Length: 323
Length: 274
Image 1 (cartoon, each protein chain N blue to C red):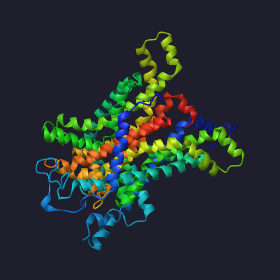
Image 2: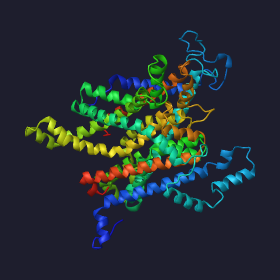
Image 3: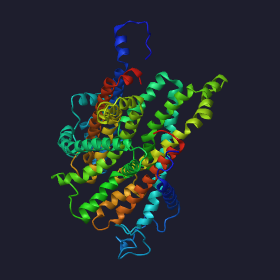
Image 4: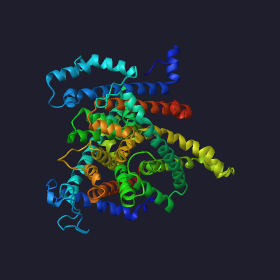
């Protein structure tokens, strides 16, 4: 990575002046490649897919036909190359159980997941930042302590237990809310509540410490001394600074949303990607598991890259600091 | 000092509760946790109408004692979370140290590994991993260990790099201290408080991760019992026999909560910034 300083080669200068972006790009490319390799081996190391899928009673002829059908009789590196070719064409193979293309199954399940995740993300971020701001302003008071205890509880409450508890209380004991499916608005209440409880706790904690950091800077005191209104300090100084810190966890947050979707959708029989992933895993439908892992993995890499680039553009300290 | 009075009661309560749980996990359960008794299915907890004094927390759909299953589940879940945390710490501290010591390309590779690990959600990795290997006990323990290594690596790397600039490190190095000795005898004890805090704060997360997997039926497999699995299995009977599900859930929640409160307190006590 260390290039001679004396070279005035154009490529060198482009690399050095954009070092941060290049590093992020290379990391994204390597991560994508690792995800490809991982997903490729998912089918191959899970024992013999033919045996698993056809069951113990399959004759050797049936197994051989299956292997030819799915190209499993060829050398591994050839299989990997043809897998890469297929992926590049957007062909993720067919589900073993449903027979349909994985990519089609993904897109039929995507709207349900997005319609759950987008409101959850919006609620968690806005409420989390607002609560974090209040806690930071009331630092070391009873309100702050209560909020921090609340956030510890929210963070420690596993979403699968909370979801089941909500079903028990609101569907079984009280009979107010439906416990599975996504047909009406009432179906959204419990899944959203399950996801946002933990996420609000995380955002509250994080934004509290970001706000405290910002407000500890002397320049904020300087503004106060100059008579700038609290509101203006918040909107023009504190919020932009704190949001840079928040931006750095948004990549992580997308990942945690996906983990949350996997658990929460399963609890509430929500017909989205998360419950699909769990059910196809249990049914040993490996092409589907493989395809979904690949798409989700790539989406996460994409979001992270986007966040890193944004981060670098907004905050020169990061861009120039190198790491 | 300023943090002294945070969680005054809750900290003591957490310690007592956790000690009680550990004790319950260690003593042999009153009944064989896997012994079925089909004549005693769905017996309610002893404090409820129709309950029997032999089954404090009732029985499940195969007539197994819920309390005994929770006790066995606690010992397995705590053990996995503990070993998983330790594996994560060892791998992370080693890699963080290597990155800080060798810098250059080694450091770049380790940083990249940290980035990659941090960006991929645990659940997705776990599903990919578990579809490749059997869902056996040690596979899950190792999986959980790897889920957390990146935080220790990041922490160790940053703290070691800054320790190298400190007077004591420069002094030992100029006295001829070998890098390994400098790290293990001098730097590690100095940065251990931050690492201990990270371990206590990581423990509940590891426990929740294992429980979630087992809840989905992808983690610990029978005849082994995990708290998450108890919850996942009992969920079907929520309508008639809530105790099969709710008690294991309460135990998971109280354990993670107690551990988080203790972790926060330890952090404040040791003066480590989160």
